[in-house]
Length: 149
Image (cartoon, rainbow, N blue to C red; front, side, top):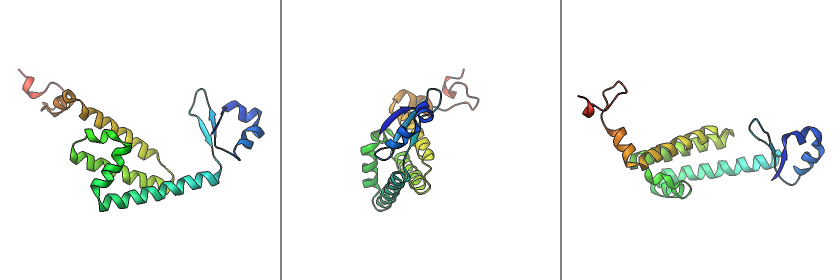
């Protein structure tokens, strides 16, 4: 990967595009998201590989849930904080988003689901948070029913 300030693209585009023969280019912007330049051949190769891996993982998950969970837990160790039923739901949801994203090229739903599940796992990792969220509520957003006078 080669990194350039975004403004270099306007000033010295030949230098930037010449790098694309050998590597991907990251254009760094000050006030906005960075931009990647990738040759189509490399992009299509990565997309194809991702699709193959996502489909393979989906097949493994259907045939052997425990093995799929173990494989995902290798990359997502926070899965251990989820209760078993939620862990299964998480694995299914992430695999579905990964497969759909690999097929369409749109991976943002997977990234959003992963962030959401990570936050859920973090909540489950804190016994006090679990206790507070598990207590009954009066339905008004106020204190738990047990704390009412």
